Length: 500
Ligand code: NAP
Ligand code: MG
Image 1: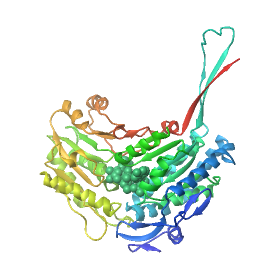
Image 2: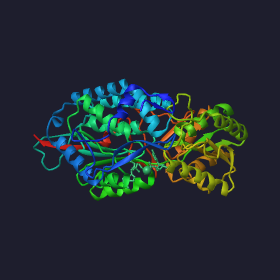
Image 3: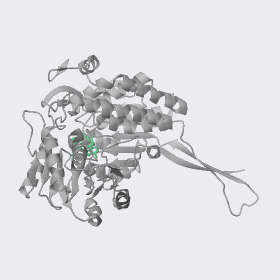
């Protein structure tokens, strides 16, 4: 396979697709125990273009055993922090050297525009691995002055150390396959853990390629295992496995709760990055064209399949019509096409299932009285396209306003009262992110503490930064990934008290 939709593939991408795909367990590339495979579909055409192993619980057992062996014995436990740093830096260099290949694999597997994949997904992934490499040598503890009663004639010395939590199970979604993989792999390996990575069934390819590069970088066998398979089989087996110490999950709130419950049975440490219904709040001092461009980026980036997507737009009534008109114009003008085409601005959604889900939401909005200022229908052809959609005439109890759609659909509402906007913004079970658009610093500052969300952006949206903790309030999750906070997810704190 040398071309997709008439666009030539990089020779490395073609070479990867020409190989039979296997899973990485204990340093070996293996088929599933059952021998079963899963189709990998190009969402721009709906056609199957390769297959991957359908791992199940027997495969998870093998991978957990391999990760356990690697954690307890061999070269990995003896690796010094500086060795773990060097390996991650090498992995980052390899990722960077293969940036175009990774971008193309994301584009044909997920559907996202290749230019975005290259300059957002892959670029962020490379930087993130480098950033986390630095933490390998900086996992420190504290020394404490103790005041032990009774034993007054002896001295005590206290200190804390950070130790790797152990074997980690990582379950990731399909919206940013490589980036979500490294968000878990890099801090876990920096901390000295070993792991099993279960990519989403819709987008398994870059996780497998990452496994190849990890081997090439020199990671000992079993440190990183990649098991492809379905969520309710492989994913569930991993989340509830008694042989792991930590499960890191990104995906829907619904599945996140199942994963959390399964983990808790074994007291497995768990972090959850879940859904969102993030508000974009435009105050009355903003140029409508600037606000509309920001709102478009907030919702249409990655076809709206972003946990932080700005899917609820609230504009001060004085600017509402102007912002909606500009936004509808931007939405209608976006060039739709296969992700692999560098001219594409809006690719297909990840799958038929997702396309149907999103279109059903739009229909439910229409049935409840909403109107489309732009979009509102599927794109042409057999691909999983949904036109960028702006819904108006909506009210707070419609499903399109309350539920996460996870597609290029924004609901726009006007507001009058700044005192009331925080309440409306917070009127959701989610609390992942929000953006405030205004140059009035004092009003912005007064609003920030009132917003119940893990990230608040001001005059921007969807800016993800390696150094900034990322995670949710409320039903959007538990724990913070990225930044220094991520290391806490992959380490245990040990308190040591010595009597001298
Ligand atoms: P999902 O079902 O939550 O899947 C996320 C990951 O969990 C995938 O690897 C999935 O495997 C796996 N999984 C599914 N069921 C599982 C189970 N019972 N036990 C353990 N793991 C399981 O999300 P999705 O199907 O990809 O998308 C559904 C909705 O989730 C979206 O429409 C959106 O609302 C939300 N979502 C949110 C984010 C986010 O970043 N917050 C990302 C993606 C999706 P399979 O791929 O085999 O299902
Ligand atoms: Mg799924």
